[in-house]
Image (cartoon, rainbow, N blue to C red; front, side, top):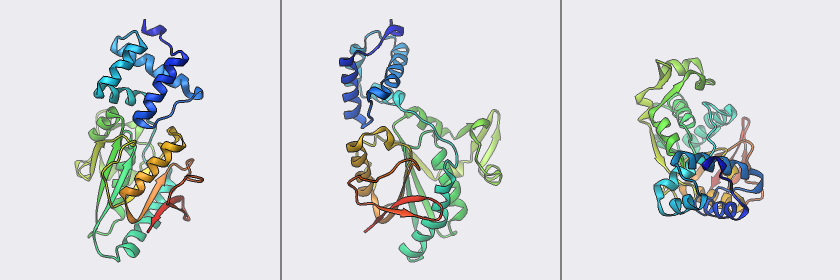
Length: 273
């Protein structure tokens, strides 16, 4: 039965290699137990008893593959996570974009929240930009994730009371409605964000982005996959633009063109061409 399913070494290598080829996500002997537990759970849901049979399914069925990749990813986030990075965005990046790069000509700032999980990051960005951008300026946010389940939560914009920790009281009052069981994002804020499925293994097709947030995502990739993802970000970004990664992540030693940037509030990276 599915409860007794486990991966022998050959099966683990088969799944590990396939997952890496399809998503860039790396499983090693250290985190093998995570893959095994998620796979057992998936087989129980599908009432499938053989890991080999399920492997055949995900090779043939792209939708099932999406569901499987969704199940093996970890989605941990919250509003205003790592406040120092949002301070750097507000007090360094946005003034730089407005005053120095765009020569104060009103325009649209384009941001990509890559690996947006259940939406807390892009909604935080939308609230912040609404507050601090001059009236003549606009913004667009693309928010993407490999988890369809997370994207559905993000699009709905409903968060239980336990999930709104970290939102300033004035933001909560201005951008949320209190509803039964929690809070609902205002439709006016939702309209500023486009949520879309995206596998970071592939080119997003985006170009001329001013800011990319991809935090606590590349830690799931090995060095080769990390470099490929970061270089695809480079291709998607404008000549003078900014990249935020997780505060515990680093591009140090990686073969990329990004410049390290240390601000008074947080460190980030800059495309300066």
